[in-house]
Length: 231
Image (cartoon, rainbow, N blue to C red; front, side):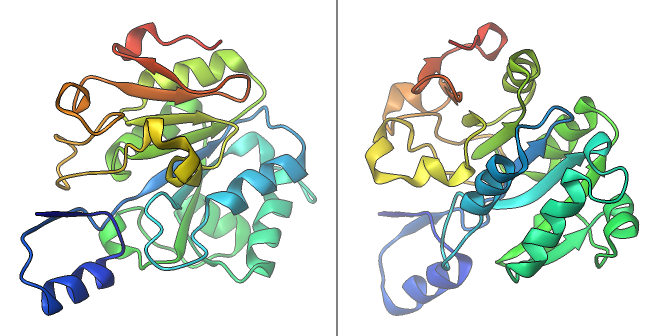
């Protein structure tokens, strides 16, 4: 049996040309929340850019970007400069109602079934809790990241978001780094969020482990999200 973690079109080609039984989850949606307390603009741009897919089949690419309203206010805000940066990079941007109005971006839904590969959904959120609700509802529980200088906010994010890998000031695609096999958590076996790998691919880690990577430590493994703490 082959366990496929790749773009949908690649899965279709594999099924077409082979007779190997396959278990696949080709729709993987990772999210990034940009908090009201961001690091400098260049650091923020680097994290977002490195989270975006630069080739078909990148399983940990960011598809949903949520921006706190405080960093989008006024001409020349960090949010405005980031959006201009993404536009200049040729990224196909779609947006929820607030971001669509603020940045003049085509309106869409965060539902990944309505997003094509390579598209990035952006929305402005009024508070932390709204970002958590959107990520938990529309992302696939693979890897999600928060960008903030506030460690307490990052800790709340780790506790509240139901994802196998949670990141602080790190790009989501870091979990696809072959040098970080310890938290290759991206084998989702269905789209119902009820059965995905948390941590190393072994029987005792399937549903029991959440991995956290902060900007001050290497990875740490935690069994109960309620007890996560930053080192």
